[in-house]
Image (cartoon, rainbow over all chains, first blue to last red; front, side, top):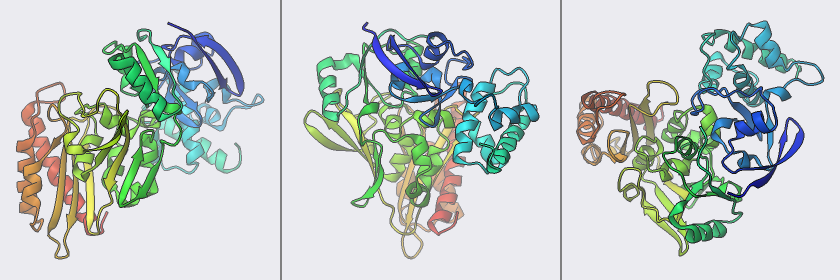
Length: 160
Length: 291
């Protein structure tokens, strides 16, 4: 089958590649671009470990073809830190102990990034609703909700 | 999991997309949100030779009100429906439905029209559209035609669409005054298909009696089910508790569930009864201006 040329902006940098149309976005990010911060968890669209932000919306990169990202803009966990400074959400996960094994964390961060852009003054209930597509088997979610709240407060105060 | 190879097509107009479907025949599959298709391709339950990606066709992502209808274009995502003001204010049953489909990440991508075009009785919008009396617009080589939602689901994973047609729009009649609806779904966890789901849309007359009732059932049969006996029973009646209970029993008797990992057929039938009664109660309260 013919390869297809794509150009995708990932974390602000344009990348061009010739890819097989069946290549999944998560494999493009991890294997073609070697950006391994985005994790593969269930590979069946349930767990959200592979969440990235495409044109502002959080999506499961195991359930999108890389070719669909042609001409679009992707943000992965590697793009959250700016000028050596952690994003308020990353800081929040650190301060509030929002992770244990860390496997779900990149997905949790990317879902949170998109969510807090839309709503930087959420209730705990709204946060729990927003992360309902991201599974965490360690924390019981309590500290993840706290980490989101920490970040939301920092963002309201003008941190990001 | 890696799907089988396929050839990728990315038409920029609807005409081009329909031309591709005509040329490529049954080996072509349309890709819109992809949230059902891509998992099925990864599991190799389907392996189309050609993918026709309609995501780059402009002007198909509208949610608009015109000619007495809410019109939902082919590329409207569930997230967009969920956050639409007209949906929140005039179609509580649609808002209820959108927010329990899959999970928020899937809803960033999944389309409302795809939820119907997939023909899966476990999907949620079919029941809601049955309750609302929607119409589906199919666009093909001969132009557009309208299909009543009641005629759209002839069998399991089958729709009334021809192979060369694209579901381009859903039209939902704007509810008259004194209307209200609700969708209730029991799921084992977020992201699961419904154990059972019930959609209700009511319109009351000036005396408070039921003028029109729509009742749709999710995942309790080979196709989405329109509970016609319950609808007929409700019409013309004052909706007191006894009437609601009787209608709920009728809806349960119209369901055709099967035993599976989500529960026994008897359990699901009873669940339809309980959910129908609750959905009718909420719809009634909303029709009277409540929440």
